[in-house]
Amino acid sequence: MKRILFFGTIALICHLTTSCRGNYEATKNAYEKAMEAAVERPTITADTPTDDAITEIQPMVNQTAEARERSESVNVLDDATLSTYSVVVGSFKQRTNANDMRDRLKEDGYQAVVAQNAHGMYRVIACSFASRTEANIARSELLKRYTANYIGNPWLLIQE
Image 1 (cartoon, rainbow, N blue to C red):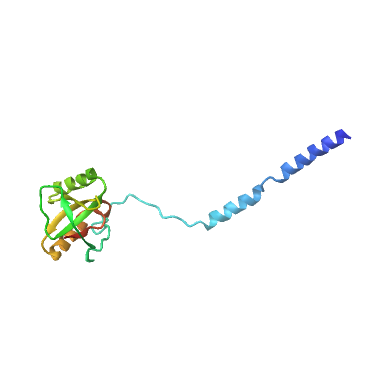
Image 2 (cartoon, rainbow, N blue to C red):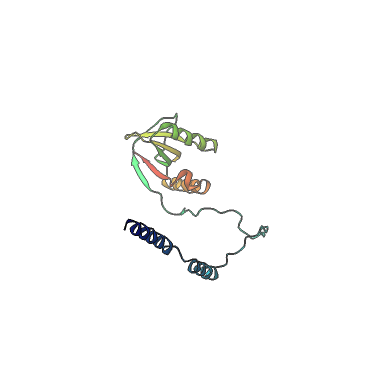
């Protein structure tokens, strides 16, 4: 009796393992059908661009929009004074990061300064003007010159 039970169990296990096998023909047919329906991709060649081709991609920036404005009192940490309207291009918690951005702007010809507000944030100010119009023009020029990854969205600081 034990032998019959043992061989019966073996036969059942063999039957179960072979019946769960995937259907090769069904998989092959599905693959061939998918390959027929596949969209042909265009080939890329190394042709030289013509004179009217676009060779450099510039990010689109809305330069005509008015800048955000914020009125706050700041202490200038550099030997400089600020006018009423300043263009802020970065705000940092750490002074070293603000100094790095200020130094790069100075290398590019701006009279950049670092100022600290009452909450301890370091503001990198690229330039400062007496009129709002001049500040907006300078902001637009900064947006044209630098990528949004570097200066983000510059805003106007109105000195209290």
